[in-house]
Length: 155
Image (cartoon, rainbow, N blue to C red; front, side):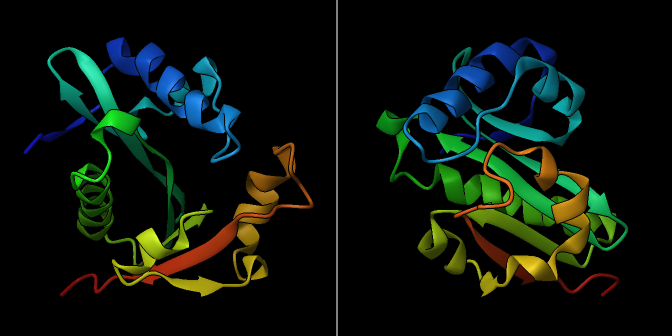
């Protein structure tokens, strides 16, 4: 089993290549190098040697809300539980930070539902819509599905 680690600055180019490979196929949103560098502390990676084979970010939106974003696993490394490891790492960090609600915008609803995420209307995420989504090329016609997960924090 590969271990999940916090991303390093030296991982950024590989992370962008991985994320944008899937973005080019329409599976997720592209990320610029500057966006990944600016948010490097949000990211977890899984490496095979020096190669980044997977990544995901937990981005804090507000005191009570965080987003799992940019979850990508190299095609040859899929179906091995790596994506699940990354989601669990993000949820663990959210719990440690005391953030009670985690959401994601995705096309892979069944994947996230297996962790207990449930679908919600995107309009239930107003801070997200106005703080970040308006910059997205798909705004206001986003076709991703919003899913939300409630953590037991302070327990």
